[in-house]
Image (cartoon, rainbow, N blue to C red; front, side):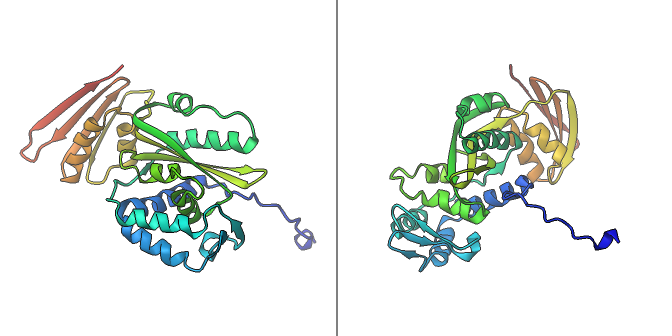
Length: 271
């Protein structure tokens, strides 16, 4: 019978298809270091204790398949990170933004393919509008979310600790994630950061919300290229007020409903 025939084995992709779930997990681990740096330092120090022999790093089981990795600095890079985290002040949590993940994935694909990479500003400008600072962190050969965050924070071999500086920079508040296969290193991961990023909506939209922001409300917020305007809406939600967003391309009217029945409107226009 057909149901007794041998089922041919299918080769599974090395990188899972659900990149968004992985992205959220990576950002969660990074946020642990941002929200409570000393606690993250204690956790990482305990986790990596005994994992080094000189410059040879025996990857802990929690990071995936155990293997030996040759590092540039050995445990000294971990000590350096732990010392910095103990004196680092908390930073705002990073929020994952789909458009930034698109920019990060584009670079990951380019690096994985061995071709020329598109400059960050070109990738960002093609997806929306950013303000403030922007930057990227890249790491090779790791896939597990916890390992990706830790390796970027450790920044082994880089005296300037550039990847670490991006992850702990409190001025950077939104991020995107990309992951691709790499012929030499197995995988390449990219985190793209910005202070503020806005993705324009093609059509006018009006949405009301009270309490926790809905997905539709967040989509409209993400189209506003002003942190001050966004704060007017979110601050009102936090204290239980109803907010209506009236969006048109290039314009937003934020209506806050006061508890006495009155309304307060704030209008912002941009080109």
